[in-house]
Length: 373
Image 1: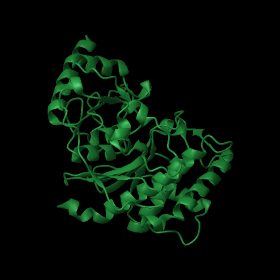
Image 2: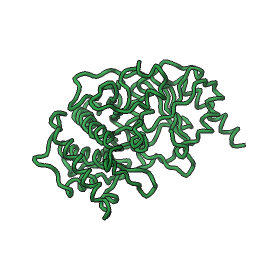
Image 3: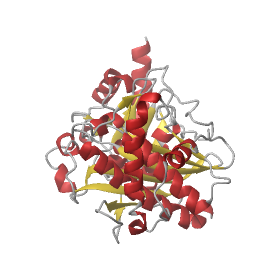
C-alpha cells in the first residue's frame, strides 16, 4: 500500500514541525518586547509575523535538502512580497536571525544543517519556492506556517500545519500546537481557560506535535521538548461521546470566519448544553483527535473560500484517530482542485464519530431550511 512507502516523508515532516514549533515559541516570547514584534498586515489585513516567514523558510529548505528541489512542489500561504518591500528590511533581518538560529539546532532534530548560515537571498528563495498551486495530479506538500496568526500574536492558540497530498488525496498530516496542554488534567477547568494558557520558556507542560498517515488507523502525539525530539509518542483516540447533550463544540474565534449565530442555533436544536469552545487555528482539529472535544463546525460567509492548507493536516489526523470530517452535505473534502476547497457544501463538520456526525448532518439540513425561509 502507498502508505508503507512514506516512512521518510512522515519522519521528516514530524521532525521539521518540531523544529518549526521551537522557532515559533521563541518568536512568540519576543512579540511583546520593545521592537520584538515585527507584525505586519497583508493585503487582506490579516497579520503576518517573523514566525510565518521563518517557518516557511525552514520547512522549504529542509524538504529541498531531503527530497531534492527539482520536482518539489510546496503549496503554502506566504510569499515574499511583504518581505521585499522597502520598509521590510528589519523584518527580513529578524526572519534571517530566527531561521539561522533554528537551523543551527537542526541536527538535534535529526535534520540536515546548512554548512554556513543562510543569507537573505537564500531565505527569500526558500520562501518563494512554496509557490505551487497543487491540483489533481502529482505530489504536493501543503504548509500553513502559522495557522491562526491572530491567536499567535495574542499569545493564544495557533498551529504549524504540514500535509502531503498525492493525486488529490491527503497522505499524511502533522500539526504542531505549541500552546496546547499535553496533559488532559490541564483541561479539567474547562478547555477555554486551559487553551488560552500562554507558553512558558522551557515548559513541557504544554505544546505537542500530532501526526498521522492515511490508512494506518492510528494518530499519534508527542510532547514538545526543548531542543530536540522526544523518544516516545502517545496514541490518539477520539471521544466516544455520541450524545449531542454531552458534546463539546468547537468553532472559530473570529466572527468573520464563521456564522456563530447559525452554529448556536444548530447546537441548540440538537440539545447541546455546553458553551462553544472558540479556538484559533487547526487546534480545533487537534482537540477532536485527542478527545477533548467532539464537534468542530464552520459555516463561513458565502464569499469566503476555504484554503487547503487550513484543513489538510487536521483532516487526516482526525480521521485516523477515528473521527469523521465532511462538508455540511456529508461529502468528503476535495483537495484535488488546487489552493481552494472547491464545491464545498455550506460548511465543514469534523466529528468524533459516525453516529454524532449523522445527527449533526440531519440537524444542518433541518436548520438550514428553516433559516432560509
